[in-house]
Length: 239
Image (cartoon, rainbow, N blue to C red):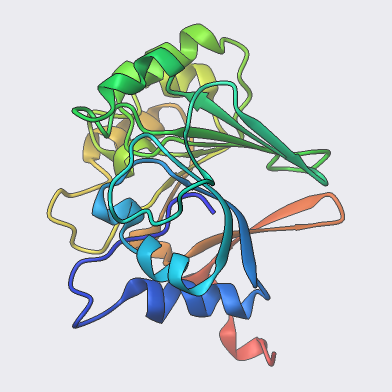
């Protein structure tokens, strides 16, 4: 699991208990091998408390630590070069560099854990880049350190903020699709018009959760399919 969703007023509505945990149960999940929290802002990690109370978790990583992370021996700081391999799947941390973790306390967004996922021998979406809340500074570091990085699906940094997804970054990576994870009527106006214009200029399709609802990818027999919750023909689904 990479980020958990948010938590705002648990007395009124718990995203973890009402959305994330039921979804995981529906998918047959009984434990989590690995949880990466890109950083500890509430909108990215707020539901973790509910999740860690419900599931056995193998390892937890983030760019910093606070009291909400109860695990002891199985916590570590994310850093460039860490990787895990599973059947048909490879996960790697591209950022931050170990020597830069000291900056994460004061710049949690910019030093988010950046995660690269590869579905081996999959089509048409094989390579996924998840940026957390990282911005331009991190993007240019990634271009310098990984000049040949292949990205099919880019989860836009900071929900599509105008201070992320620089034109050069998008032009070099040229993902097949970009995803903005944002809430309806969010106060910041994410994804920003500036980022939408950059994507349009580069002919990169944007999938925005404000319009689509939940976006999911399914992997089966070497094929990865994208599904948009609000576009599903639910009356055809009898399961």
